[in-house]
Each structure stands twice: as C-alpha cells, then as structure tokens.
Image (cartoon, rainbow, N blue to C red; front, top):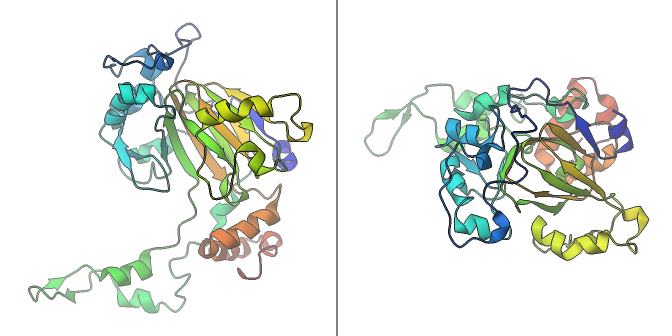
Length: 353
C-alpha cells in the first residue's frame, strides 16, 4: 500500500484480471477511433446498431457498452447523485449517436451510484471485485444495527410486521404501517455513495473536483480511453478553475481554457499535475485530497469505488465526515469501537463522540 501511504496517484495493471466484467480484446480488433467521428459536428447521422464497433470497441463479452445495452437496455440509469434524472440504456445509445449527442461540447454521461442495488442490475456486483492491492474500506465498519438510534426498541415495538392499522377511507384494515413510523424505524442511515458505474461518449467526463470526505478512489476502465489530470492537494483551487460558489466546468471546456496554462513552463513545479492515459484493464488510484478531472476520449465504460483508508490524511477525513455526514459519522464511530479500532475512533471530533 505504498501509494496509499505516500498519497500519490498511480496506474495499476492487472487489477481486473479474472473479472467477468472485463471484456476480451485483441490488439488488432480494437479500432483506434469509433466509427462515428464525433469531432465532425455532424448535421446528419445514421442509426448505429448495438453490435457496432462504436459500442464494443472490439471487445467481446464483459461490460462493453453493446453487451450492457443487450442485457439492460430497458433499465434506467442515473446521470448524477445530485438530481433524479434517468434514462434507459437503449435511449441513451440513441442519444450518443444522434446530432445532439454528437455535437454537444460536453455530452451527458451516466454516473450511477445505485447500480446493483436492485434487480436486475444486482448481478453486476458479482462480475467484479475490489482489487486486492487496496487496503480495506474502513467505512464498511459502520454500525448498521437497526436499533442504533432506538436502543430500547420503542419505535420497533410500534411497527411489528403485519400489524393491522385502520384506514380512514373504508374502515378496513391495512397491514402496512404508517409511512412516518416506518421511516423512523427501518430506514437506516446509509453510508455515503461510494460505487459508480460510469458510461460516457467522447468529450464527456468529470470536471475538476476533489473526492468527498477525503476518501481514496480507484477507477478501472472496461472499454474506451480516459485522459486524467491530477493536481497535488496544495494546488490553489482557483488557479485550476475550482471557484467556490460557481458551477463545475465540464472537462472538455476545462482543457480548452486551462490546459495550456498548467502545462506551460511558467506553471509552478510544486503544482505540476500528473497526467494519465487510461486504457481498458488499467486501474487508476486517486489519492485523497488530489483535485482531478477526467475526459473520455472515446465511448468509455468504467467502474469506480471510493473508500476510507487509515493511511494518508485520516484526521481530515474525520473532520469532513463530522461536517458533511454527521449521522453516518456517529455510526462509523460506534462501528470502529465495536470492531476494535479505538485508535481510529479516538480521532473523531467531539461532536461525533
């Protein structure tokens, strides 16, 4: 875990070996560019079949976009954690090949943190695993006891299963408990979003940001090509386009407006970014606190996890958890103590203890 200890970004090879999510590629079969030239700003288009090279990039099986569309074409995926907009993969496949998707400076990308939570996509969680080269996720130690906030069982006693509750409309009985009571008793505090499936065409991507809660992250590409820039944590945010109160600049626009500056001879060496080109089967480790952005250079499918490691700026992680996720922080504190990690629990801010 040397890169976790040093809090430095690295590219890792072979982490996806053995995954059924990983398509099989032959060097000859993989085209260097999609069959649709997105830079042409086409005003006309031709519908592309799910078996086209654009949707598979020469890959067979696994999580090629073509295979995902064939398996989950009618399933809706989310575009963001911040809003509820969703689109089926079949419709999305049409969007990225029609004039709107081909001409958009920053096309819509899928960023779904709830994939695998329900049928039918829950099978996807069995098709990859967290690479063994990363330390265990300490957020997994969260205390998820159902009576965490109700130690005496008072609320739970009120909503025993199949308890009949009179209804007002017909005087009959309804075996479903009142929603307000249910939400108090069985809706546990979830851990913050931590895993995503990422799908996006050329020019899509993620603008400059720092991952939440001072977590580390790993990202594995299954199809496509990503371009990364990662900046040291000491880099002044405003100098790289991260301005508080202003919306995030799309990565394609950021490269146009900022790349020449940060790659020039006058850019301070201590803020020099790490640049990465990431191909299928490769995994990028994103250390805590590093501002970074990602640009998809072609239709790309990837999976990513954020995780809490005890290495690196752990105290900063605790401070941000207390500030941004106080309810989760209390459960995490309780879990760390329950599982014998008093050394880490002791670092919690006073408002959590």
